[in-house]
Amino acid sequence: MGVIIGILLLSFLVFIHELGHFIAAKRAGVRVETFSIGFGPKLFGFRYGETDYRFSAILFGGYVKMTGQEDFDVPGESLDDPKDFRRQSILKRIAIAFAGPLFNYLLALVVLSVLYATGIRETPNTTGVLVVGYIVDSSSAGRADIRVGDTLLLMAGKKVKTWEDALLEFAMHPGYPMELLIGRHGGRRHVTLVPDKIGREEMGWSGLYPMEKVVVGAVIKGSPAERAGLQVFDTLTMVNGEAIPAWDYFVDQIRLAEGRSVQVEVTRGTGRVPLTVTPAFSEEQKRFMIGIQRGDVLVRHRYSPLISIKKAFQHTGRDAVLIWKSLKGLVQSRISVKSMTGPVGIVHITGQVAKGGAEVLLLFLAMISVNLAVVNLFPFLIITDGGVIFFTLLEYVRRKPLSRKTQTFVQQGALLAILALTLLITFNDVFRLVGK
Image 1 (cartoon, rainbow, N blue to C red):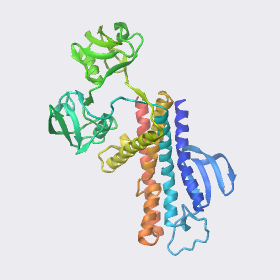
Image 2 (cartoon, rainbow, N blue to C red; image 1 turned 180 degrees about the vertical axis):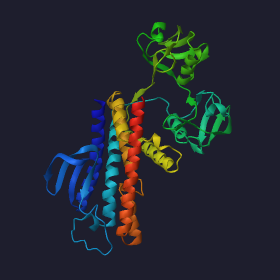
Image 3 (cartoon, one colour; image 1 turned 90 degrees about the vertical axis):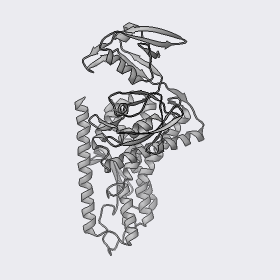
Image 4 (spheres, helix red, strand yellow; image 1 turned 90 degrees about the horizontal axis):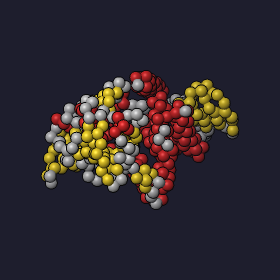
């Protein structure tokens, strides 16, 4: 079922993207010969007016074929067909190319605006003071001059508003020094931290975790936690007489106990309950565990229509900046291509996300839609919308199109680069899935 949902989600996003190109082309007076969801042989469809509407065999993608769009423009060539793409003004051609990403972005805005207006679950106090709750001793943060209780003020000279933003910045700088400004006891100090590379994706990891409320989200049946009396919604406050500042701190204490009994104190309702739990070794996870899952502390917020639109713009803006930074990191070789996910990975992730309910799935849809918008605007590849815009602007500056030879070289080179990258990303997706 998850695979079907994933394919439907991708197909819907492609449909919205191509619909943008289609509407812009029609309004510009360009003939649209084909509107296809998917690539390859035609499965079924119909013809209406000048356009062949079809579903094709390979659903991972789609396209709009306009008259003259894929033909080479030769200097001095006569173009008699007024509906030819090449016959249109610079502004119209840019508008047609830009419309696809714009529709993806507008879709994300609409989805997020509705979610914020009807009620969305959020972590309370997600912005403001970023207090360090736990530091893994063996991590880069453990080796740096950072302590529990420090506040994270600046990263590379820029203010970070949420822990999510901070952790993402670390993730995108594996092995690269980062200058942090830390607040401690009213003073400030500069600290250099080099995030460690972790996992097959080689993403950056600092070993820093936020001060947070640690809540039990699920108790596995027959587990040590159930036998000890732990319940869903219990708040873990103490372990062996020490305060629990973060989930990862508690996980480490269970691991370090190596099967010995652990004294745990939880808050349940208005009272405190002391419990004794004995961790058991998990052959699957290869570590000691007690059989609980983390529960996120979420509060449902409903916003006015205007505030909902504002928050939707802020949300999509954060996603767009993150995606742009990721692309920039790939070009600069700071981020490994192993961290990228293609259609196979997205379909798999969508299946997992769908288990979280409609709200989580819609949030994921909005994120992927923004992703498509930004990636398609990436310039210098003539087969992306950004590439079309770039070369159209280049034609405007030069006062003439590129030569047939140059167009052939650039187009074939771009196609080979995209195919190679697609194959590599697909291989990584399959390798990740098979390796699980």
